[in-house]
Length: 194
Image (cartoon, rainbow, N blue to C red; front, side, top):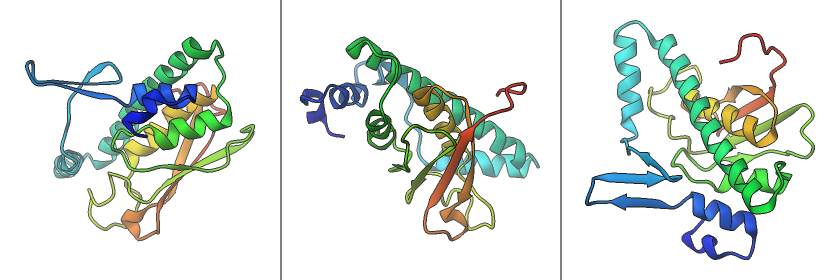
């Protein structure tokens, strides 16, 4: 997605081009993204966060928190995209091409995701990336490491598809796999929503 997409004849690309704009307000020391104030953190902030939690014997809690925060961020982004789409077109439901664009072309610096088949979404959807920003933050390990990104995709796709989703990271570059791949399915257990 480039700045030129803001002037595209495609309504949805124009919408995403507007969402992706970053404004640096040097006079006040603020950055706006999505029309919201944001703080830019170095990527190693996540590594430092995890190191501190491991030092305090709370690495599992840290992974849970990262997933919850990721889900909240994904939900907020998804709600914004759906709301803007509804304002622009009058429709609440996004087609599979819009969902693909929203996932693959909205750049928040988390990596370059590739969405598997969406279609009518009856069972599951996969998202993969070769460059998750979380890979390497824990060093080489036997386990998965993309807890924020998994939560982010759960929240984003739940909003875009209009169905509560939960997922797992089946493969992770942090443990030597070729890419990080997430499989999300409808959450049938609604009693314990996070």
